[in-house]
Image 1 (cartoon, rainbow, N blue to C red):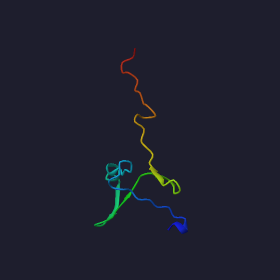
Image 2: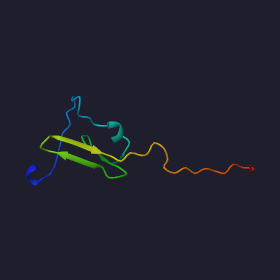
Image 3: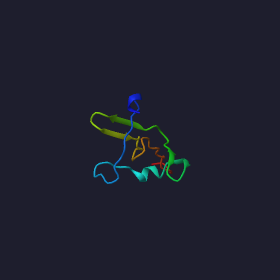
Image 4: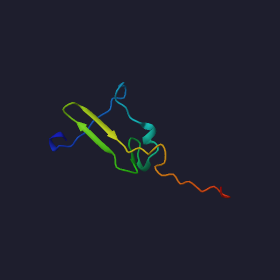
Length: 80
């Protein structure tokens, strides 16, 4: 795969630094599932960054804002 310039990485299950966010994966749309494989779909594309020479990688996803970007305020009823 590396000779075809296809990046790949693995995550060590007992590593203190390597992490998989199972809680996020479990809440994505399920496309298909087998005994050993689960294909999920994210609502927006993921950003995958890899540096093979330094053996570092990250998968980033867009986060929803904690507060709305637009607030709709209603006028008080009854005037002043």
